[in-house]
Image (cartoon, rainbow, N blue to C red; front, side, top):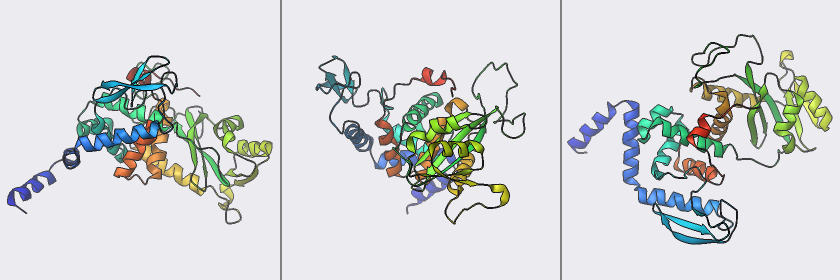
Length: 342
């Protein structure tokens, strides 16, 4: 090792964490030039999106022909509606020329960095990254599965209703870093997140309602994914018992106050409770999440948790490829001005 290189390593070691991340990302881009990384990623995204053949994103016609290039990317023209499009039209990468910066940004997503810290590392403004984050998460939360298998654990957890980022709130005093509820226990100040998971780890985790969950909300959230062969395991809240009885589902109720957490050595809700614990710990790092964005953060958490929070090349590519197949037309204004609706 040369003296100059040894001195360089000593200098890097003294840098703050954010600066070290910037050095790491620069070296990675140098070792894997953008022409190879970004090009391969766009090619894979195109093959994933158009795996059943080219289709116009405007009218869904398959009568598509090549139509020159736009910003260095292949352009297409629909022979039915006469509109043009590229591989990235109506996707998270639409109208962006920073393919490799997206890879760096997704690496920051896995590591849970704030927007401002990520902006320093990626080299763009935090406002741009706000748009990137929620476009990506809006696509990601569209990932779904058909039905649960076997035993399904269901339980709810609660987050305090938040209007973080909203100015001019008049109905109450502004809270700092999440704040606390004025009422003890579960109240209509709190947002109910229903989590259902089977033993294959197929999971639903979404905002259900304000306050206590009721049976119609349970049905709206998971009813289409349940079959008569499923076994429902829940806590003792009466809404679950009533719902299971009406649907004719085998049901086991875990009553924590009697100290019995497992029935017949098999039926429990420990997987869901463990997920709740990891979810709360993970979301706490953001010092409060606006309720209107909570579903996005839940989708983000489920993805990284299922990959052990590891920002490997495979996981980064999988996240981008998974989001690319879903149509995404949101803009910065549509995201920022969105409302919380349940």
